[in-house]
Length: 364
Image (cartoon, rainbow, N blue to C red; front, side, top):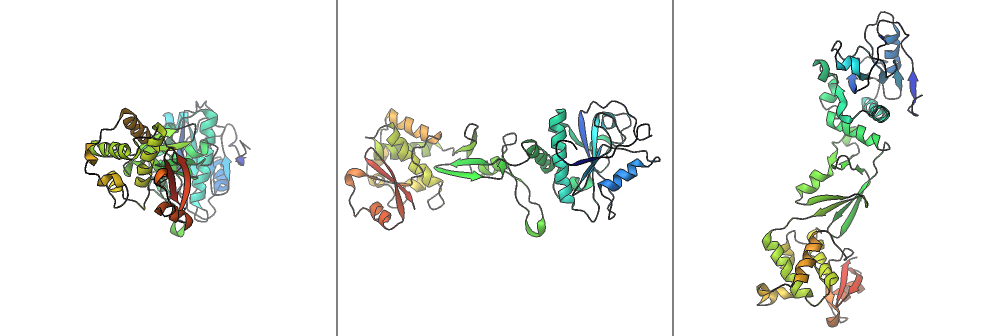
């Protein structure tokens, strides 16, 4: 056994023609497919093939959907890459994946990814040094993976990276506006946050989602808070949108402290991130009945203070005291007939918090 992976050791006898016994510096790992679709052509069957005294080829491991068989010590070279005395044969660990018709190839690929991850960690081999047989001798191998059946080469390498990190996704949080989402099947891999999706119809594997690409496609600037295990997002805004956000915070909260002004900016941005509100700052602010200062004849003549400008910049940079609030109302104008209070009684809104002269709410 090796590292609890359940590996069956069935070494080719020393002195055989397919066990040259030369030192292997183990700088690379080479992935093959056996090409033998015959029923029963599993890992043990290939081990028996390598034990034949007339067999001239060799490799280090064979994986199928249930077992892994080791045929040579990793620190010995083998004849598997088709490059003579090149780096494929002399410096890599060769792994064959079974394609027998009575086996589950998808499971065999996953077992291989776990094995490769284990070797990479033990031998300090970077993922960049995992190679296809094709890279050494231009043979179309591993044929199925090269044809994206059931996964592409890039996804296979992502599976290896995931397996190297405790062999399971750890999940990440995603902060979008005032919302915090948890994606349990995602892992930060070189800053891409790969989401491993379950199999789709008829068991077909789905392509892994690169969360960064998806968030950036939504127009968000993406960052990473390692301490909080959280993907942070901010939405880049135009100069006109910035001016408009400064203006509404000025009119709604010019008498509030810095935190109070940040919270009003948070409400605007929270609405922007919520599907039930418009999706532009202009449309959020000028939505009918949304913000009463927009009706002022001098609305565009606002002169925001330095504190207001700072508050808006902090909100855009991710500072958020709102706890997801999407509504607020001035406390000194609060009566039982105010819509917000009626909505709380009707179970439509919940009271989040009070700060300064504002009471904040969000949908129930």
